Image (cartoon, rainbow, N blue to C red; front, side):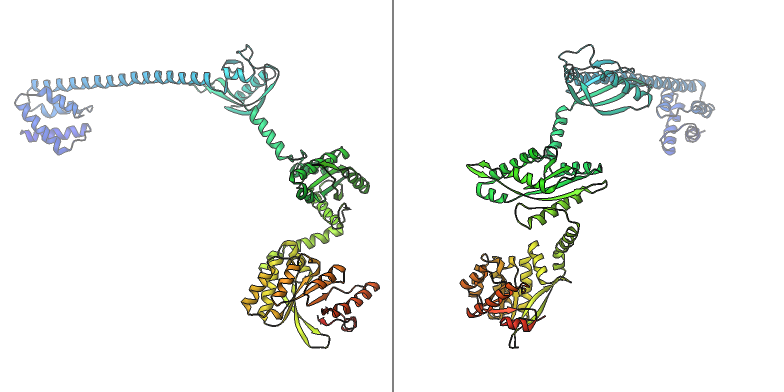
Length: 610
């Protein structure tokens, strides 16, 4: 049989008996060369070794090779090939064993080196860390601890008993609970006793250390001293609940105390105080003096009301919470008497008064925020009567105030959405002809006087005045516009008027601006500048007081618009005497709306119609 035929059969049995990445074509080429060499009686041992190197080492590879080659080659050639195959297989096995042995030796050496490094690192951390470390057995007894822990616990040297009672028992019990409940980690803040009798707050992390078999072997505790952090947190908490100037509770703290008091269901009285005229002290003697006054007010309130909760809830606002329902008139008098004693600052004897709003409350479920709001609303009602006043909560008045304030609060949105409109009423000479129209504001059912009062309260007066000016001037006919107090003394009023007249090509002589007489003398500069521009300037809400007459006498006033006629007989007689006086001074008098006959009898020049 030719070498090529032998190679074909030989390749077939090798491929069936073992896996090798060599392709069949390439394998056949190699085997044909090996068959030729075997016929020459050479290299039988080397060919057996080649078969092993090429991984033809399946369980039947050698047997089937000998079956193919047996009829073609003498026994000594086959024996030499088999000997080379066996020797190469043995050498390969020895080499693999050596590799495994070397790998095992390296793994052991690496593990020992890593263990040594790990132990060295642990020893370094254990000895140098500022965190206390303790290792416990499963019963909770200390096996080992570091110097940092001894220092945390107030020991200069490692004592025999590291933890004092009851801490030692508590830690041991915690360790046993962790084992019983299969919990591996327990974190808590612990107050531990120190060796000198003091205590230290510590974050304690207890962990279970398990062996290679997964069973618990030890507990380790990491103990960090957090006393300073806890003190800082307590200080910050105290600061957040304390008024820094007076040392009194602040609003947040007082609200909590009020809520607790109300929850008892027992009657309490809340007084909301505002220090009168503190701005005079601040502006006259400086803010340091003003702060000194506030500190003294706080001290005196605590003296005169030793059983009450006293707090500062605003710049010059204090609250007092008193158990029961005392006589508020007597209470207000007591507070006023205590505060009326002067305190001397920079050589000046300063005394202040307070205005107070009182609320009696009882029963659980009362909202503390609502109680504070009622007291504050009552305070504002008391202040409307002047300085050194007090008032007690009135439900009906509070409901009315809340309705009014809610309306005022909604005004900016109404203004932006165009809900506030300008309306015009004719103003005629008493003889009949139309003189001009009067602009007035409407917001739903809210009439002009309330609209401008709301605008003054919110700081919208200037924007509202510009809107009315623009609307009125764009109509192109003579118009009277009444301005509010704030609008009348607005320093930008003249500039707005000038720019609006120019933008609408509206003659200044066709504009009649009525400034609020109550804004004088602050608004007199506007009055004179507007007159110089050619605008007819009037005063409205004119009631004949001396201040109004003085303004008319010294200022270029075109006319006055009378306030609502008084109902009292003497006041009406006084008004009737004043009108001729004004007319004799060349001032036009506007009245109404009202009864035309009465207005004509009064002697007015012009009448506003509905």
